[in-house]
Amino acid sequence: MELYLIAGLGNPESDYSKTRHNMGFNTINKLAESYNIQVNKNKFEGLYGIGEIENKKVMLLKPQTYMNLSGQSIKEAVDFYKINLENLIVIYDDMDVEMGKIKVRKAGGPGSHNGMKSVVAELKSKQFKRIRVGIGKPIDKSMLIEYVIGAIPEDEVPKLDQGTTLAKEAVVEILKNGIDIAMNKFN
Image (spheres, helix red, strand yellow):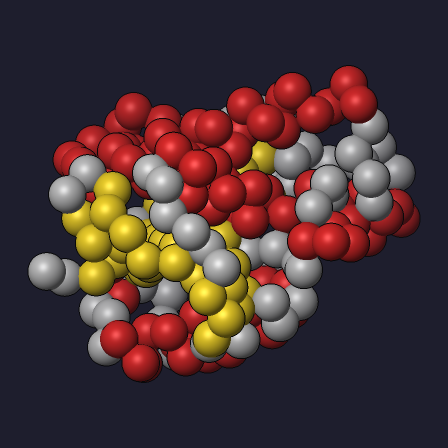
């Protein structure tokens, strides 16, 4: 059975779990809970678990390298399991997507996202699926860092939660019916 790697980007959770930058981790947590996959093995500079979603064998991965080095963890897992990049889905926060919405893509560049820059650089490829979870933009552009790693105001939690729920559903849709159907349904 082919293995699919589903990687959510974020920062180590004790300090960063309630930040916009952890939408990838939050999505992985929802998948793990829904499909009863324990994401507690420590290898590939990350936390991972292996299980099944929609009769597909999956590895859920949360790199523990801090965001800007996420690619190292993903590359180690890809190399170890000889994962075809066709079977890689990366989930991450995106300021260019409206809060509470997601964008599903077949491939593409990293944009301004440092975690994705690391993934593209390490894999030497842009040819992998990604789900961008919208976090919106701060009103004051000088507050970008505080915006992504600062605490989330209570009134924004439901909207961001909606985004990670959609991202979880998009992963399931990709595994079940393929990327094209997922893009039509969620974009």
